[in-house]
Structure formats: C-alpha cells, structure tokens
Image (tube, rainbow, N blue to C red):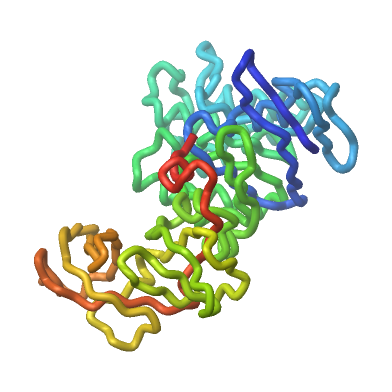
Length: 358
C-alpha cells in the first residue's frame, strides 16, 4: 500500500496502491521508464521500498528475503547460468526445492515443451539466440513451483508470430496451474488480450486500473484513452444553454452523453477512430471534411481528414476489398454518435503534454 521508491532524484514509483487476487493474470502496462521493472523487483524482494508496505495473503513481506516469498521473478535480461545446459537451468529450481530428480525431469520437460525448446535441451545459453534465452528464462520461472510469477517483458525478444502464439499459451498454463501472474509489458495488444485486469503506469504513478473492457470503454483520463486503442482528441467549451453540448472552434457543436458539463470551462472530447463513420447521414454528430491521407493497415485503412474548422480527425475502417472506398482529396461526411464521445477535463498542462508517455 502506498509504495514508493526513488533512485537519487528520480522517483521510480510514487505511492502505488493496488491488489492482485489469487489466480489472477494482471498485466502492468507502461512505456520505458514508467516504473514497471522497479515494481516487479519490489514485489520480488530484490529492492526495498522507501515507503509503504507490500503484503502477501495479508502479511507484510517488506523484510522477507526473496527466496522465502514464494514468487518467481523472470527478468528481462534472462539471468541464466552460463555453465549449465538448458535443461539444467530449468531443473535447478525444482531440484533446489528437494523435488526428486525423476519428477524434476518431468516438470522440466513440460516447461521446455511449452516454450518450444525441447530440441535444444542440451545446449548452453551461449549457443542460443536472445529470443531462445528468453524462453529458457520463462520456462525456468514456470518450473520453479512458485505460486506468483513476476514476468518482466517475457515475450519481448520473440518474433511477432511466436509472441502471439505464446502469449495465450502462457496465460493458459498459469490458469491451469492455479498460479497468479504479474506480467509487465509495453504492448497494449498483448495486455488487452491476456489480462484479467490491467494496471497502467506513467512516470511511477498508477494512471488507471481495471478490467480491459472498462479500461477501453471508460478510461479515467486522456493518457489512458490514447494509450489503449488510440483516439481523436478535440478541444472545446460546453454550451451555456444546451446540456451535454460542446462547441469546437469554428462554431461546430458536438452532442455528448455527459450532463454534468460546466459552461465556459474548456474540455477535451475523445472519439475512438473506429467509431468515426464516413459518408453516412445517420450519425447524431455530422460534419463535412476532406480526406488528406490514406493509410493502408492490412485488413483496415485509416483516413486522415481535415474538418471544416481545420481540426484533424482520423477514421479507421475495415477494408471491404482491394479498392479504396475513398481517396485523397475526396469531400466526405464525417459522423459519430453521442454515446461514442468521451469527455475529459482540460488538462492543466495542455493536451499535448498530457499525451506524452513520460
């Protein structure tokens, strides 16, 4: 509770408070320097907090040494024993706990199979690629017998295809084994697809914490809305006489579902790119715009448009065929419904500063 940690003048973690349920798969999401690794090392006992308490099952563990915390820390830097073969690295944990050798061999084989390294069990770490070494470290954590897995970017060094495959297998084995996992990542898609809950860190502070659906649809702030899924952000001022209406520059008005707006106090409205329709007259909010750029994203396209007041807005549309539905220079009708509008208080340091990762 209220855990803080500083290194000289740098505050790595600032009064962080959160809980993790037994059997939960928690993803900690944040950019480089946000405090993710420091958080894991504090929980593992490799660092001591400057303030606050860390508890396991209601018991404070601030002064409990790492090997007595029943937590396996899988570091980003692998930390393998260079003089031991792959299978020996993985079997080290079970054997150290006194598990009979034949049982330790079975545990090791299962972990090796999960990370697809059964054929390299007799190799030394120096004979493996960085991605393979990371998989060995992951297998060692899974074989450790600890009830809590602390995973620091466990899939970061893998190629894209293997990363997609292993992220779900990793979650599955955690769930089947009755383990609890705290999985640190900078990949929002990874977090959204495997997490029971997501904790978002920014410059050592918790920005948001909740289930993926809530984080996406009801983000607590502009930073979270931008980090998870991305959005269009437009500056405006609530109308004095029209409830839930925001006036943008150039006289454009936007209908929202927020009935607690204070007249004349500037706000930021956010609309997800995929909620922006093109060419439809059925949306509650409709504006004219011009296509300025088309971005091909495989199964979808992004259309960057300039509205009549000069504001930029982006629509993300699933591709319907090989031909573009719209092209640069086309004049289009832009639309979105009021229920798709997020309304945020205007940030004290301005919109651009609020969108910065650190």
